[in-house]
Amino acid sequence: MAATVYSRVNSITSQTCTRLLVAKTKLSPIRSLRPPATKAPRMTIPHLELRAALLAAQLLRSLASELDISTENCIAWIDSQIVLHWLRSTKPTGNVLIDNYIEHVQELLPASIWHYVPTESNPEDLASRCVEPQQLLSCKLWWTGLD
Image (cartoon, rainbow, N blue to C red; front, side, top):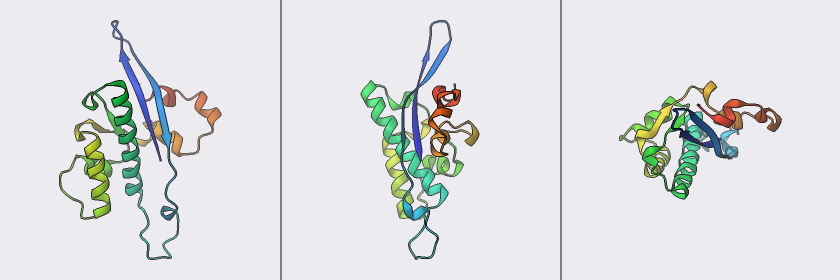
């Protein structure tokens, strides 16, 4: 899973400049990859996406604090409509673990800043899809985000 934070600056001449500030990746827990031979529950794709949202929320909150920027002035993007629904919802899902993750993300960032981005336009997917570092050097989406 991966999270990226970009800075977007609007100039006096109405030009915008968006650049990558920081990126962070984290490996999925091994139990999400293990075949369901054991009774231990496997992590689903939405559950992993929710963990990625938590990683992004922690990274964005930390950087906004360092730069003295209100998180209400930020935009958070996610390519999972299921997780987006969970983050905007006030009703529990019925799964304690997922509800705890949702609550943690909601404590870090307001639900109103989360928006949907299609997977093919999501720069974070590049980091989680084993793109070679050499390929990232020439990838405009990685360096400028959703410009």
